Length: 182
Image (cartoon, rainbow, N blue to C red; front, side, top):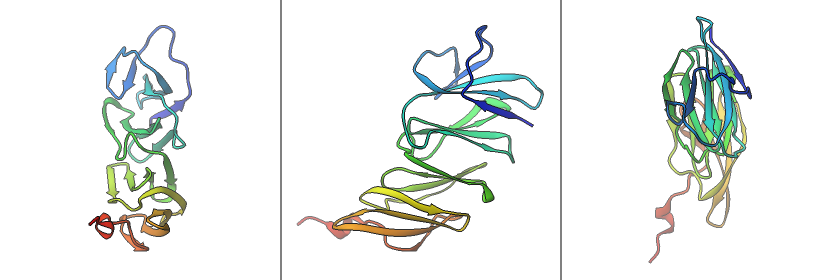
């Protein structure tokens, strides 16, 4: 079983270090989130993720498949602990500003200012079209529903999504055709 430790210093003697987005060894740049990954065979490697500031910064481990998601600076990366070259960027990158982990169903919810996405161990589960004009807020979420609030023309709208499928259960999403000029 793999193990992930975040906020670690890089090894002074070099070692196996991968930089994301990448992956390339020995890259130079402004990297903020670092992690030491211990593979199932006890060998170690280090991951460095480009820095930035976002309320969604951190990491989530998918225990079922030995992978993890790193969130930093509005971007998200899904990385296989056993194979550092096996990675992908998450939906909504580089504009992720809110994340919410739903451990009961191993789902990571991601939000930018106008839309939502859900991500699981095997990849993207769903991705909404535009829900709001701007200012999406996560009200609350659990394994059944995601409650959101956001700006529309003339005020605020509340929308409830199905956590597993992303469909709108209540409320109405923003539609530009409702506000056509002319």
